[in-house]
Length: 104
Image 1 (cartoon, rainbow, N blue to C red):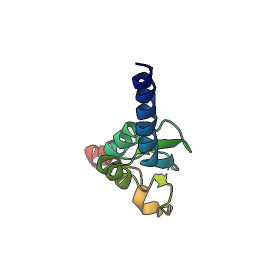
Image 2 (cartoon, helix red, strand yellow):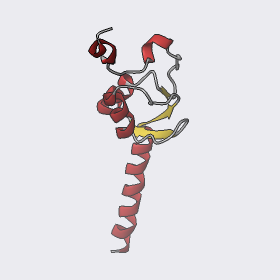
Image 3 (cartoon, helix red, strand yellow):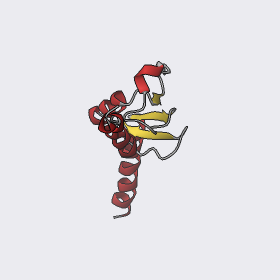
């Protein structure tokens, strides 16, 4: 029985090594303040809480898709991070119609 007990922890070690091999390191480089609500939700779902925070995320199509959707805010290790032009991250808001309500 001692031989089977020692074999189980070795199997756990192998699975943890496989999981570590398929991880992505992503860093939040820009703030999501002023971004669209869907972008903010994606940042939160990736687990980012503050600027310059680095997270290790599993390398799967779902996470890669989320990182592609917010690539202008997040830098991924091994891929070049290009700082976006100003027009790509302007503040998202609806226009005020107060002026037109006054009749001016």
